[in-house]
Image (cartoon, rainbow, N blue to C red; front, side, top):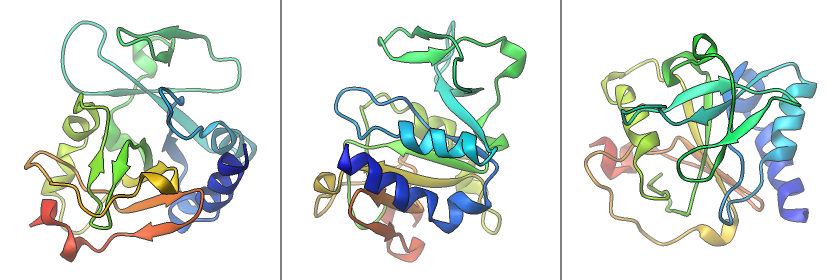
Length: 181
């Protein structure tokens, strides 16, 4: 509980969070740090909270569904709860200001180890072509103990702008990120 409270403070006091209106979060699964209090703060601040939704039939790109308290949820094919909303309410990552991503591990270069499905990387690939305007911002959120010395970046990996943990805020320099070279 204390880790989640500290994470909430660190996220909600970040510049990227304060200036963003349309923010994607996630529902904690399989040991991920719980961002529920971050979502509650979003709703208090009248920001629009989105949660990732896997494609219903096929495809490798995430959609993002608006979520409010009481939004009905159903488990996806991996057993992770997702909002149940009409397809017309789903948006792509390009329409978001900020994406808060879950992490299994991260390093100081902004490399992220996820659950291995590659859904976020494929959904955010369009950011590679943007040189000046980067939207959405990408913030990984994790427990501080998930930080590792180094992760090997694959050509398809999307580097993070920032990692926020229960103990620190790690700002990533694009010049040092191998995935951006």
